[in-house]
Length: 181
Image (tube, rainbow, N blue to C red):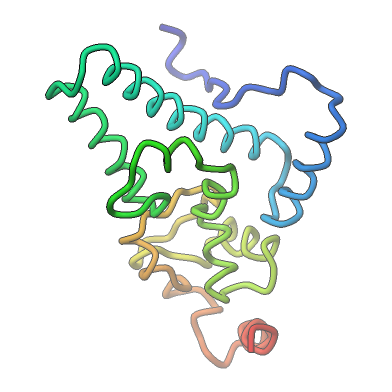
């Protein structure tokens, strides 16, 4: 175990640093989702890699020893986690988990959901509103744009109560509403 106060990397950088097709696809993702840098894409890729690895592990356990209570519990835990975040449906199979894409992870970020709900004019502005403390989930201020929003929390996303944007007469809020209309 390392030093508890030291932050650790939560991503792994690509093995081929100058691969043109990967760089172009990452650039498109960064623009589409208003990401600050490529590390956010790599972090989402690692989350996706973890879920897909868990699905492969469950499939390997089922093929090796059959459906034991342990494998069923692990499969249900993995599916329930992804259902909580709305990445797979109610009757999801392991194939659906294996077919997840990076966009599925990026769509569940608070920054993207704030933009999709019409609380901001662009993904970049959504990021700014979140970091400046104008966005709340169920009345609780959240200042992390990469926060993964569960399906149950999605309806509670709104402007923070003491934010200037919470007032309908705010000029910036009216501009946001006019752009979305």
